[in-house]
Length: 146
Image (cartoon, rainbow, N blue to C red):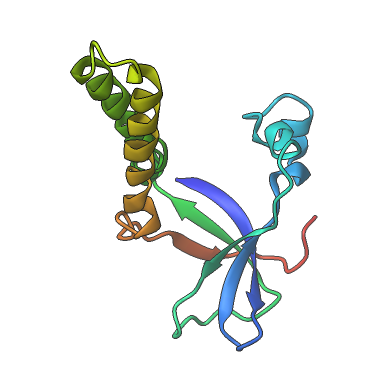
């Protein structure tokens, strides 16, 4: 299992969500001993990631939990989020490049076709194609982060 610590928060409608800390707080990554995601996350300013909890969730706001996914689920999500757009881009660009061998606009049209199919490859992730991946949530023994 791959684990990440989160905090249960309530939104303005009272629904509960899990808020994940930004990766800049990972001391191992910042020291160059981890996966490096903390270093790269400083390049892109982003808000905390949130995950909605089901309505029958028994977690209280302010409670710290850990959320885990299997390695297979992480691999599936990586393929959906990164692999499909990449395959779409290369397929569109290559197909258009070879279909328009003698056309003056061959390269710009191949780029446009690649970008179009790459964006279409993002749709499964946007539509929740792999939403059947359910994380395991466990309470931590302490309420404050150490």
